[in-house]
Amino acid sequence: MKRRLKHRTSSIFVSLLLLGLTVVFLMPVIEELQNTFRLSQSLKEVQAELMILEQENTSLEEQKTKLLDPEYVKSYARANYMLTKDGEQIYYLPQEGGSDE
Image 1 (tube, rainbow, N blue to C red):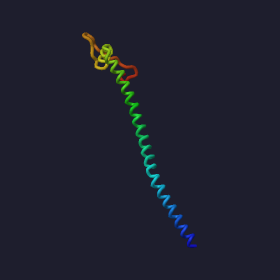
Image 2 (cartoon, rainbow, N blue to C red):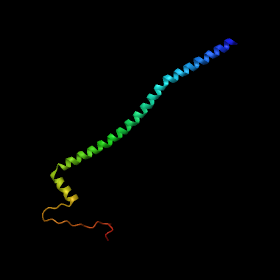
Image 3 (cartoon, rainbow, N blue to C red):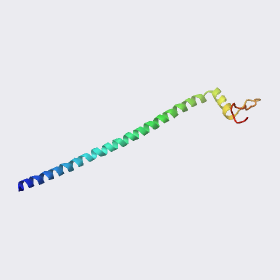
Image 4 (cartoon, one colour):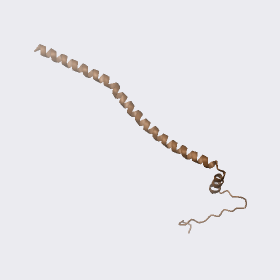
């Protein structure tokens, strides 16, 4: 009977020791998994931001190319800033379906 009790006590002690060692060895693995997940999320956010910036860059490059064309600059200035050539007059035409009726 004492032998069984002693054996049982040592089995419980060994089991608890192994359980403790398992927890100690698994903690760094769990922390690395959490870190990997966080980095993965961060990478997705940065990739989305990069795509937006690349689209913006493409748009700006196209605008830069257009602004190097003197005819485009003249047309842009006339349309957006109402600039005229000497002797020209600007007339505003009513738009169809407007509330100016």
